[in-house]
Amino acid sequence: MIGQFLLTFREVLEAALVTSIILAYLVRTNRRHLTKCVWFGVSAATMASLILGISISLVYGFLSESMQVLFEGSAAILAVAVLSSMIFWLATKGKKIREEVESRVEAIATRGARFALGSFSFVLVFREGLETVLFLTPLLPGDFQGTIIGAILGVLASLALSYGVFVVGMRIDLRKFFYFTSVLLVLLAGGLAGYGVHELIEYAQFAGLDLGWFGRYAYKLNIPNGSLFHHKGLLGSIFAVMFGYTVSAEWGRLLVHFAYLALALPLVVRAYQEK
Image 1 (cartoon, rainbow, N blue to C red):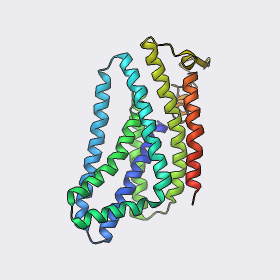
Image 2: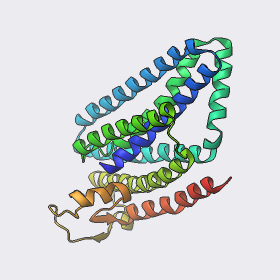
Image 3: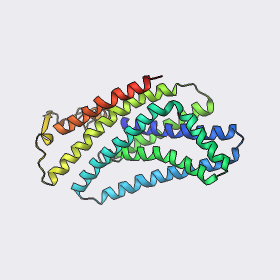
Image 4: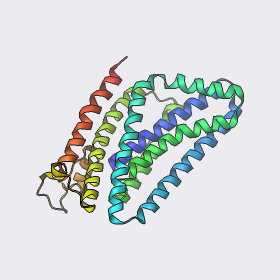
């Protein structure tokens, strides 16, 4: 639930950030009448994200066991790819996000293109919604209740923080905030990458494929299913989502997990340390 909370919290906060930039700029440039277009785009993006999440869940229920395994593995790998691209985009371009968004809004508002402004808002918010759906999809089958609760709490917490920052005027170093949450998301993505490979290895077994050493177990811990420290237990599940912990892992899973961390963590840290 913690991982689901963190990702939802981060993504909704990003959506709130860009929305606030657009609204504040329109008000500051005496274009308050165009804010309705922005809210329309935000509402449509939110609804589209919910529909996408529900549709994926419904489709998953009709798949065979082997196809469910393939679906979870593919969704996890896709989620890691999309999440990673957005982490690095924010790390490298985040310092100029206000200028970039405001310049786009100015160009659109000058033409008086209401539909274009709504579409621009839709794309920015739906991008965050798509990331959230992709990330939560592979976690939903294994922990439906925890995923839903974590997502709801993440939305509520991000909206509360957004209200404090953008309405009340609460001071917070957003760059430092996004730096620490980016590091945590890289850890989450590393575990998710390993999990995706694990599911794909299982699908290969369903298909009768021999992956050699890549699909063989690197270790198996003698921890029973009912233990708190099992990766589905109360404590183990937290480490499973946050760090990719599991009581057994194939060599392929470990290789991909640690290779991702070895590549992504230094890049993120370096990007945020650059002035």
